[in-house]
Length: 182
Image (cartoon, rainbow, N blue to C red; front, top):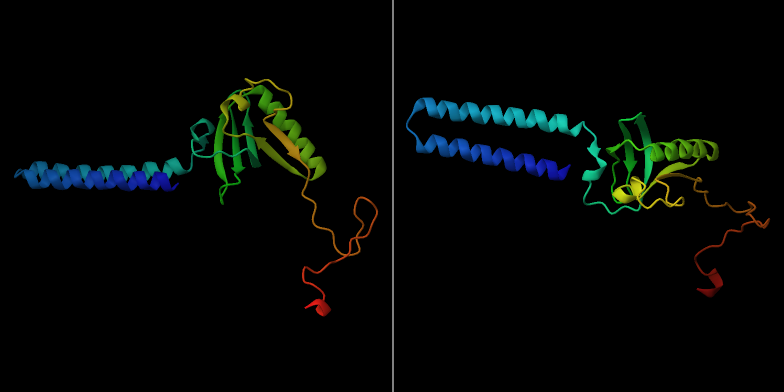
């Protein structure tokens, strides 16, 4: 988003500079009026298109800066034969992002299976290497390299007195040394 905003500001500054330069270098009132109308039109159009662009999903192939190994799939909407729309939470970003990836039958099947498994386990659906093109399009072809998979829920830490997997009760231990040792 910050890159888009910087691009918009740069465009507006260039448009303003063009209009001011045109107004300074001519004595024709018609040309000055044309420059002002161009400035007003370009600023209005840029702001409108910027607003429209923000509501569109970003093509997943155009994410160049994230090196995420996996992403949490918060929401998904497959459109058969056309595209898969994803709302992803990346580990290196605070806010989720809206992406679209080209339709892939293998990925759509993995996604459906992962959603079913995650619902049964009360877990999450994860996307493996979301921005690695060869991974998404199955070029490697390894069965272990699925695009989407389910992750079991993160288990909350055990409280004092609860049984862990081995049948032993957890006991609370203070991180501080005993009072007699201080």
